[in-house]
Length: 128
Image (tube, rainbow, N blue to C red; front, side, top):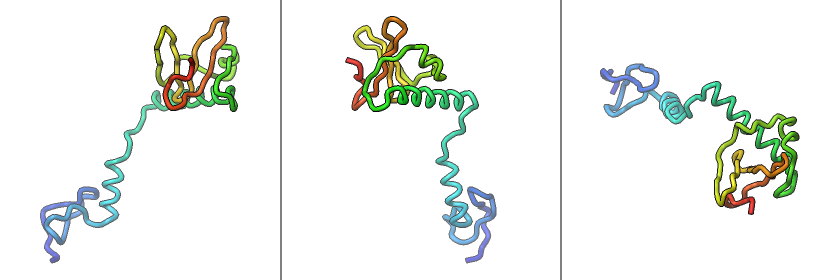
């Protein structure tokens, strides 16, 4: 069964020998082809920068929370720690309240330059 067909391996392009329904020359090429096809697309530098800042924002919020579920901090404290209010994952608007989230940790503005921080539980209703 050493007949060479006009077909070639989907990964490396070498000619195929053997079965007529063969798509890859060996298991290595088959695994590499499948791994490559399932690989996540590469992020741009801008997207990577936003993702890093989002994770940094979340880390800052969790550091200030420590073991509490909610706390009140000054806005200047967040800014001094390197928090960017322009970078967040999503916003929840309900009942006239705006809650901004960095993944699973949220915050909302309180009067007097204060920000309330809280961790979401099962749902997103952390601030009652």
